[in-house]
Image (cartoon, rainbow, N blue to C red; front, side, top):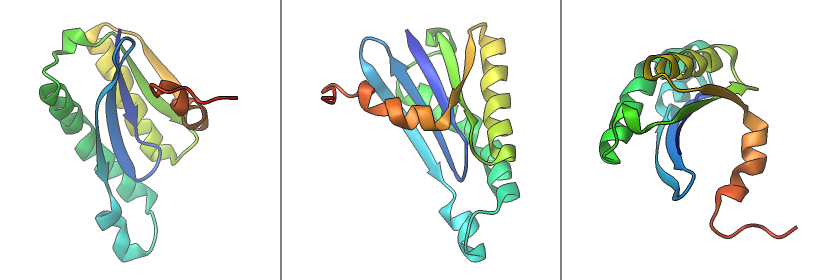
Amino acid sequence: MKILGIETSCDETGVAIYDSNEGLIGNLVHSQIDVHAPYGGVVPELASRDHVRKTIPLIKQLLEEQGLQESDIDGVAYTRGPGLVGALLVGAAVGRSIAWAWNVPAIGIHHMEGHLLAPLLESRQPEF
């Protein structure tokens, strides 16, 4: 099973493909540091607009780099929060729209749960 992940909770646009057998098979991140630097911090409206410009092109690039087609994707996961409201809405709209168009399920993922569970995706599991 291959899942397309979309992360737009703040000022970086991230996309990734995770395979249930192979693990993380590809990811791309677009930083908005140059967009926000003149203001000394993140400007939420500018972050949202940059996500609008970058999310779909990054998804297309990632699929192409991995030699995958839309039909290879079994589901879409997107960050549902917490984060900047406008930025989250962009990721949710793109994720849910792609899932609908590709006829696959979409699921919103809690940003902090993603951070907590990320180590479990590594080949060497952490010891508790």
